[in-house]
Length: 243
Ligand code: FPP
Image (cartoon, rainbow, N blue to C red):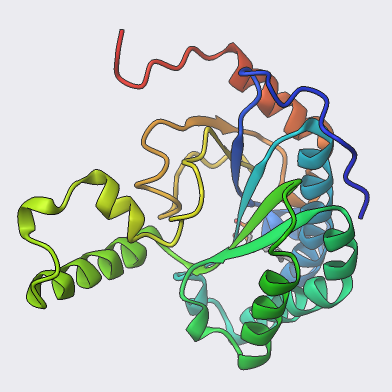
């Protein structure tokens, strides 16, 4: 995968961290009288497009919602197909993403994934850990409620052991117990397909993210859609609650 050098990494109208809810695979397939699975296959192609586009624009962090904790309740055939696509994506793309300087990272409850995918994820993370061009975080079996619940449990255990007092819990400490501990908060959160919901994605982290909802269905997502969202982001005034 070819990720060209950034052209404006100091430009503050450019988001440092873009997060995407990739929605509309099923509708893309239905519009073509195809099986939903075909929509997911084309969606995996759009993932390549998004990674390449972020690299070319000089965006440093891209986080993709690939499989939610709620997606486990989809028909088993669809779940298996999505797992197959994720498996195929890592087998096929790892070397080229590594060459392009992409560091691969994961959030979510990976222990629920098939063991070989857990192995591929570990391998991808380990192989690319020295890269710094773009941090690509894939959310797998991820949901904010579950992530925050786990963080609370870990903090409660620390209190129980006497390692911290309840008064020491502050926003920084909570952030440090989330899966995203190594990531800055997203500046721009994009959802495709025209739906306007966050669907349990990065709820804590997106407190001040700019939200852009695109009508394009995810399998049709192109670099031009990313550019459109980034341009929209550039027109927003971010005040973070201040004046
Ligand atoms: C939402 O569309 C999309 C998903 C639940 C899966 C996203 C997965 C991919 C894009 C492919 C695999 C990912 C990687 C990283 C290789 P939907 O099925 O909810 O669409 P609908 O709302 O139109 O039914």
